[in-house]
Image 1 (cartoon, rainbow, N blue to C red):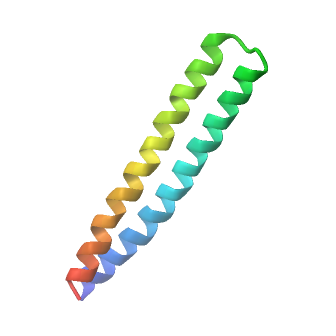
Image 2 (image 1 turned 135 degrees about the vertical axis):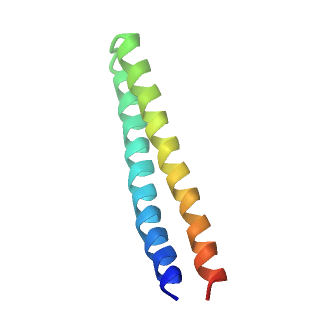
Image 3 (image 1 turned 180 degrees about the vertical axis):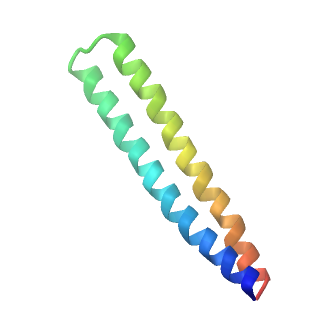
Length: 77
């Protein structure tokens, strides 16, 4: 039973963190697009956009990994 609570807690924390990180990555992608439309130099918006996509994908990985703990929680009931 204690293991089930640990799985649930880990799922809860990781899912929230994944949503926050992926949302931040999307905001950063939009910001890089704004920089491009405002005629910023190419290296500025390319680097910002690349970093933003890395952050977005990291958030998705955290979110998807959290589903594993939810499934483990459901199985351990």
